[in-house]
Amino acid sequence: MTHRVYFLNRLLPGVDPADYEEWIRRTDYPIARASPAILSYDVTRIDGTLDGTGTPSIAYLEVIEVTDIEEYRAVGSTPEFVALLAEWATFVELAEALHGPVVG
Image (tube, rainbow, N blue to C red; front, top):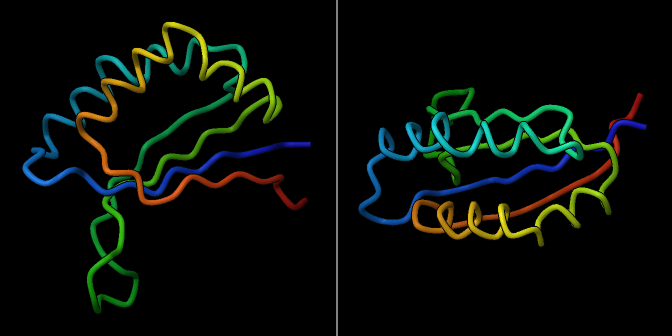
């Protein structure tokens, strides 16, 4: 069964989106995508609401397809991922972290 993890993020005040996106390409993607627990991983910048009204509550959506939620959680405690998450926290103010199986 396919399982996905979602991070709904806002940037910390003062963080330049271009700096964050460059960090994603240079650091985040290579490390995360090399993990055997992660099958796919993409970050999407949220530009607006679909109906064009209001302001989105988040700035970025991370979608991570994982082999198993417990295996993915275990990866988060490895030294490489602890360091990655520490860097990530200098950019991101986490709004919400969610997970669940794909209905299919």
